[in-house]
Image (cartoon, rainbow, N blue to C red; front, top):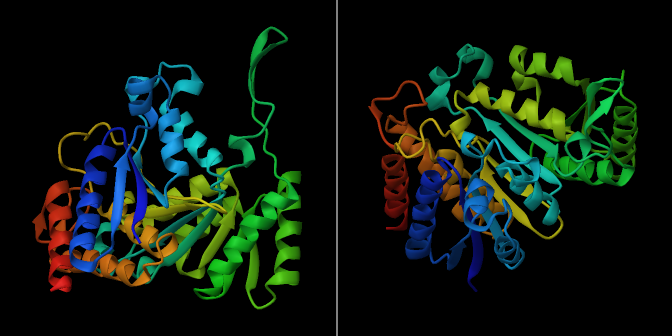
Length: 360
């Protein structure tokens, strides 16, 4: 049976990095009988330019009919002057909410080949392999009321952080289940000493652990301490579970342990749909220059193969191909070390060559 993928290149370097990921899928089709089909659609600023909507109806229909969604990146200065509902980021938030993608998996794995790329000492980051599980469709990014109001002769900005028990329950279950496939340890990150919403978060996570996952070790950490500990001793973490805002910040911090945000994939998963994307932005300063690192997007394809397409073996091959090109000393400009700096397309071609060798 064939699988259907909705491909959303988006803005900036999204167009370039997705192109390299599609090369990988093409090799998997020809060399490993994957039988993947895909159709491209617009989102973000590209969606606004084409259809006047950062999440066009045509894109929505296509995403709902697919087995998985592959996203590049959204955003750029070109669209910053638009009303908030028309900005590229509204398209990203819109598709996450529309598809019910409540859990964001953000792995931060340090490759031995890239130890020199990290700004931290090699002995601190060597062996780091963290999975940040971020709640994605609630919290302060979605809470109501929100906005800017006139009050007492001045403007006041309002955002509301809110979680229901059921929202915390499902993300907690997701994190505990992920931990069972790793080292069986979860650290729940909150701010329960000052935020009532975090009090509810912590109480609910504890209840789910005690009633459904008694075998998983659970610890708790305030978000400010967690931010410090990620730099001080990152190897203490296995799975970290946290809310939307805290997860957004901590996962980007964790990415720099690896040396480049260009190395980190992600999966956004719901009960029915899933979307895969690199965690970095659209990098408009280098868009169109063939300088971007496509490896995070290619590794997002590996996550898609594993979580949505029931192709764990092919996922392993893609990840092995990425490690092999790093072993060969190939690096895009964002990565330090190595023996040869290559372009975005050059890196994609190198990964494809490794896969072709595996295919025989």
